[in-house]
Image (cartoon, rainbow, N blue to C red; front, top):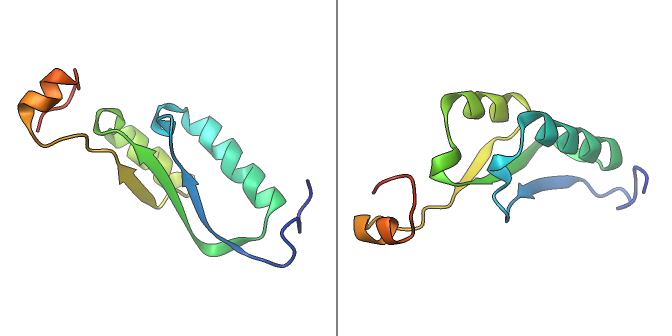
Length: 94
């Protein structure tokens, strides 16, 4: 695949989701974003979303994600009911 694969179309949205991509190392996500920029015409103001579980979010990761261009999080809240979270064995609470 080479740049221009989509013609002159500009990619305006990238979504890293499914399979908990928030567990990936910042360096791995950076490599993927750089490869996308190499292969596609990425809009200057593209929305780059990362799906994350609340358990995976900390200040270091937030700073890293922001630094590599991720500008939107899709946070997978499973429930706001404490007993459901306990049943699902989630590390976070309501």
